[in-house]
Structure formats: C-alpha cells, structure tokens
Image (cartoon, rainbow, N blue to C red; front, side):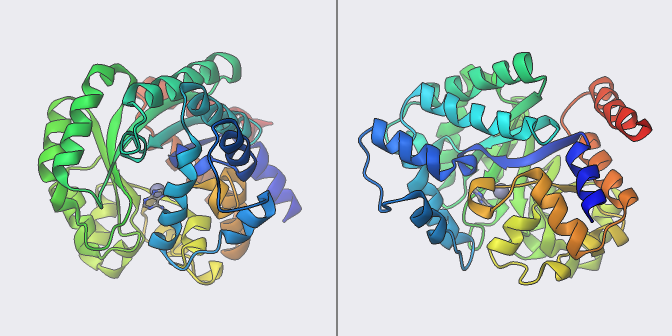
Length: 336
Ligand code: ADE
Ligand code: ZN
C-alpha cells in the first residue's frame, strides 16, 4: 500500500467537485472570525474539528453555512481560494473546477462582486504561479426557491467570462431538479454548461430529472443511480461523468463502511466515475486522501487508479486540445 500511496501522490489529477466554501479549514475560520469580529460557537480549532461529526447531509449543511459566515471581504475569498490551490498543488492536482455558493453570501449582505472577484483573482494567480488551470461553477441553493436562483443568474451575467457553468447543491431531499427547470434553461441559453448534485441522498428519479429536464453535462455524486438498471445503463452508454466523493459519502453516512462504497460497482458497470473531495475541510481529506480511502477499502489496482485519473481529465470542461495536454501529463508520469 505504501507504494500505491506514493503512486497516487505523484499522479497528476483533476478535481471536478469541490465547494470552495467547504475548503475553509478551522485555522482560517478562526483567523477570519477574529479579524472580522465574528463570534464562533467554538473556543478552539480542536473543538471545531470535534464538531464535524454528521448524521446526514442537512446536519453538515447547517455547520457549513454557519462556517462561511466568517467570509466578509474580497481578500477573505482570495485567501480561502489561495489556501485551497496551494494545498492541491502539493497533491499534484493540475486542473480544478470549483463550485461557489453566491446565495450563501449575498443573503447575508456580501455583494456578488466581492465573492467572485476574490475567488477569480486567486484562480488567476493559481494559473500563473502554480500552473493550475481552473473553471468556476456557480451553484444555486436548492432549498431556496427558483425565483431566487433566477435573480442570482441575472447577477452573474456581467461576470459570464469568469463562470463556466451552473450547478445545483444544498439539501437534496424534497428539492428535485425539476424545481429549477426554468433557471437551468435560461442558463443554457446564456451559454453556461450545467451540472447538478443528484442521487447523493435523493432517489434515481432525481437523476433522471437532472438529465432530462436540466440537461446536465456532468452528474455530481449520482451514487443512488445504481438502484435503477435502466438509469445505470444509460449513464454507461452515454459516458456521463459522475463526480464521486468517497470521504464525503462516508462522513455524511451515505456509506457506513468504505468497503461497501459504490465506486467498485460503478467501475464494474462501466460508469465514467471520477474521484473528488467535495468539502475537504469538513470531511477529512483532499484529493489524495480520497484516492487512498477507496484504493485501500476497495483494493483498487494501479490500472483502476489510472482509469479514475483519466476519467477526471476527460470529464473536465476543457476543449479537446486542453484535455489532451492534461492526459499527456499523466502519460509522462507513467513513463517515469
Ligand atoms: N454543499 C456543499 N457540499 C454539499 C454536498 N455534499 N451536497 C449538497 N450540497 C453541498
Ligand atoms: Zn458537493
């Protein structure tokens, strides 16, 4: 396993499912709280980490929305994003597609402009100083209504050049993709690509809706798709990419034993699965730790790991030439 770990660490990778607000480490949360005069319900970093035990998605989301309250200024969003980029750089992630939740900030009085300018400036530095290419994906909070999502889309239009796609996240159960049919249609008209969290806690019907109504270009999680054979076959035959997040599934109790993680079945059924971290500061690991977890629990081979990394590059929103350049970084690594 030590050998396989070293192989994973050195392997060039792409991350396609990462909520930037979910990369807020307790240390940065504390320093921003102090700087911005915000009181936290925790006394120490250890207390925060101890509080990160979740029974389900909603239990996590309550703490996640509270945590992001320390983000106030453009520099805060820059620092958050920069910390994530330097971390993944140390893990040989060479391309990342980052979610952000504008409504989690605008609803508490932070301007859209503050959020996007801070994140974007860090991404430019990430490209120039770390060689990490990236795209931004703006997510709509599905527990809010569609009119709020439409307003958010309007706010985003002046920043269209900085945003590659739209996504759908937050509390899944009771908030099916069909609730957001109009806003996704509008976003597609404007030229945005589309993704959606579906089948994380929700039933296969939600995945069908994400495909047929939202016309998604990539599926976030998708675990529960396996409960429906027709859906599973459709995902395989259309090569729909799934952004799987192993440690997240474990921490949110979707998977109680990593040895039972559905990734094995996904690979066996020819699903286009990729490995991602979701909210690494809350779930106990970035990209490499997610790879380690499934490699160990599911006894993955080196070839399985290479397939997962290749799937990741292929599933990016890059053009064919850029994808080929990413794949060739992996080829070079394998030749060493
Ligand atoms: N927002 C942040 N992380 C999320 C997740 N895993 N599912 C849904 N919404 C989220
Ligand atoms: Zn997510």
